[in-house]
Amino acid sequence: MSLVRLLQKQGHIPRQQATGIIEIENDGGRITVTDKDVIQFVREFQSSVEGSGAPSENAKFFHDVRVSLNFYQRQNPQGKLDRLAILSKDDLTALANGLGQEFKIPSSSVTIQKNLKNDQTNYLGILSACGASLRDKAVSSKNFDLTLKSR
Image (cartoon, rainbow, N blue to C red):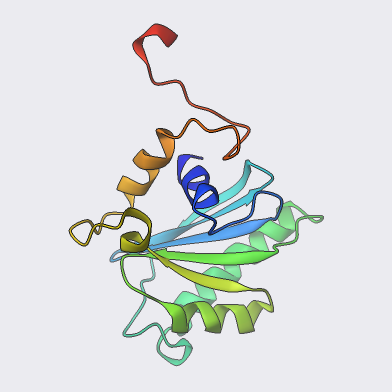
């Protein structure tokens, strides 16, 4: 939820649309579907992205994404994705474009450095930590209170 908050605040995903967030790390990744500030679906996968992210180099990755999204739609027959956001330490615009064409929905690539404006950080977990610290009603209807007085 905290990652979704950060991506919404920075304008990478809209609050009122169903968005599939695909986090990509070296050893695999995770797909999270969010709709109106509510996490609807999470699935991890083991395939990683090869090379520049070109669709021709990543058949297994595309297959894993397709299987995940098909599973989501079987579990949520009314669920329809409005967009995909690819989150990675690398710019994977080619992969985002390929996924957008494959699933016929708008897709974008978001890098960690673009979010944190820090070239030294390449760990996706840092983004979630940043999102947990946001306390802005315009960001999300869900807030975290991490202070000692909240106990």
